[in-house]
Image (cartoon, rainbow, N blue to C red):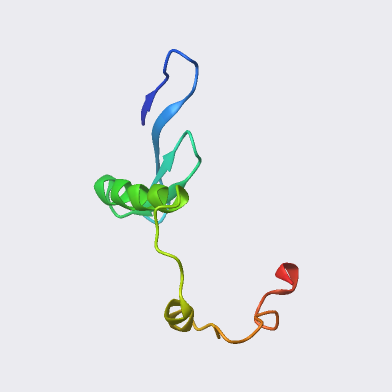
Length: 86
């Protein structure tokens, strides 16, 4: 597990967890954002992408994206949501 602790006491770094199914989870200690891969390198690459998305570095979702996810962009969406999200 790679970790550093700066002089101001904040914890930074990446924690690796070897899962029972063979995947490796990489978790950013500061933000708690995590992702996984088959190798540490893949897990880190996926974590980098997840951190970028977490920081708002992504493209907005458009109607075409919603259709790809099987959602109706023209509907109000409430009928498709699980009960706890309505």
